[in-house]
Image (cartoon, rainbow, N blue to C red):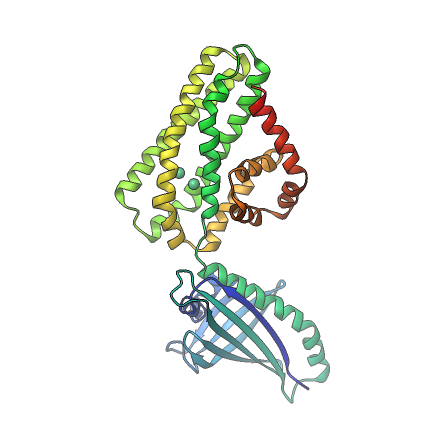
Length: 368
Ligand SMILES: [Fe+2]
Ligand SMILES: [Fe+2]
């Protein structure tokens, strides 16, 4: 009876030291890995050969408790664990190899997880065959999921796509006043087109801020000190933006109904103000806040904001809004935005989305 071996690997954008800290922090494994639902450390002492613990693995809806012992430790490089259950001995090793330049600002590590199961003399032959054939695929999936979880804990946020989204707000609100004043008094049809567009932009802005308030600010506040001047200025800007958006929504509603030139001019003035405040605000956010986000938030935490953004898009407008975001993006930014979209939207954007968007933009910008 030979040994069964499963090997999975993944390159993670973090230093081996950061990864080592997570994989050897056994007590917190349930916080880091979806597969581990409970841990009970047995005995005392730190992570060293002989260190033991009992953990409950929950995979594919089934739970199983196993006892693990550390048998090899080479800090920041390699560790091996052993476990024995149902007549089979398991050896799990984890190897870390730094890749790329040591002085690079973004270190990378190749992580290789190896799982070896050895049948012991007492194991019934049939049981081993069942475990061997069903177990290998399942084990591979679990190890791959563990590495994905590890990556999401240690990799830092890459918030470059936020800049691309900000560009949409700046561009559309800067263009807004001319679009509005270009509508002749009484032209209900044209007022409707422009009002719909500005409403989409304002709603997207509000959702964007809402996501940041919910998912970014509390984490940043807990992990770092935002310089007081930045904090005060940004909250003043938030209040000012909130106020202008509320008034603009009200004016948009009245203008759409009446196409009155007085309301139109008031709206254009208000959007000019909003665009000015927002330009300063987004610049502060990009220069002062985003570096903190990239430093203090994990990739997974930042992706939660991206996902929140996708979820808050109204279904019938999602493709259009993504196209608006992509309009100002270069090739690399475009790839980044697309990669983070749900698959169904990616397909939509690549197929009918572009054509529909061209028609939308022509109607909005040229018919004025
Ligand atoms: Fe933002
Ligand atoms: Fe903001």
